[in-house]
Image 1 (cartoon, rainbow, N blue to C red):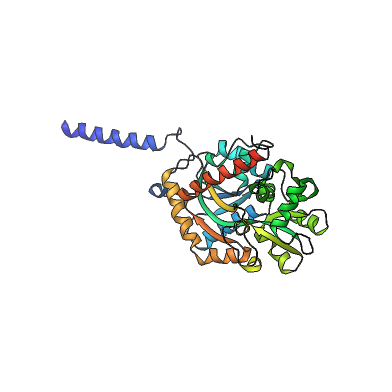
Image 2 (cartoon, one colour):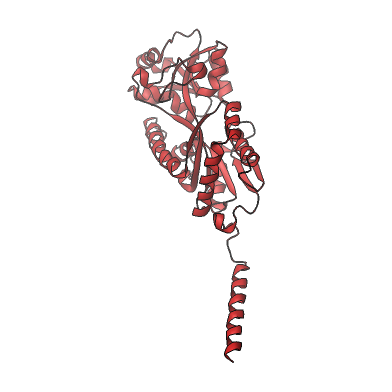
Length: 340
């Protein structure tokens, strides 16, 4: 009798475990990292933009290297989700995919800017994600024509102080966006009211550069990496960069803002993010894999091919850095009257 009772209890326990595992009420996105064999299916990396831009190139390089180096043994696909400078994608991701560890995305400072600015505001920011790693860095550059009367950043600042509306600053992004912030940063740090400055926005860095070369702008703000070819061709002069130290290559002789007594810097980072409700085990999985990736020869080749500078921060350090840059961006937008 005792033996039959024991068998019945054992079989009941096994049946209960099976039914629990097969229960249809579970979370379809649930994952427990290494312990459950994550990843068990295809991973998607989203570039919240059209093809060919910085986010798209970063997402494709990331997917390529993770596959080539065999760090991830599941297929990886890249999707483009353009719209609103990333805001359209974030609205979907922060709600429908908030616990989907199989969908990651790449971004840069607009993730913070879109959440903080008044016009075209996105209710979602980096706190609605799990920051996984910073991968690259770039810096802003203040650029003029080669034959411009402005020989250094101080001469430009002097004119902006005398008559700000007589100097046209331009950039390849909308008012309140990244190029605008970089354009007014030196003036703001020099005590000039950013609201008095004249900023003209163009649809992309290429159009802003064309406006500069065509005499329709006195100075433009752009990515330092994007201007190197124009410097080599002798078409432009870079007055200053927003880096903490001088940049090498074609910009090795260009001073930083700090060298010119302007206490300011701004990093244009690119990084990878996961959903807000990513399990700790999956977060740890990506911490390990992304660190191995940035140390790989395959990633080194991608950096060289795209003229990117490597700057790696793990999940914890990246989140702390984003907190600090958010403060800087909020302060700038408030000074411009563009904060929400």
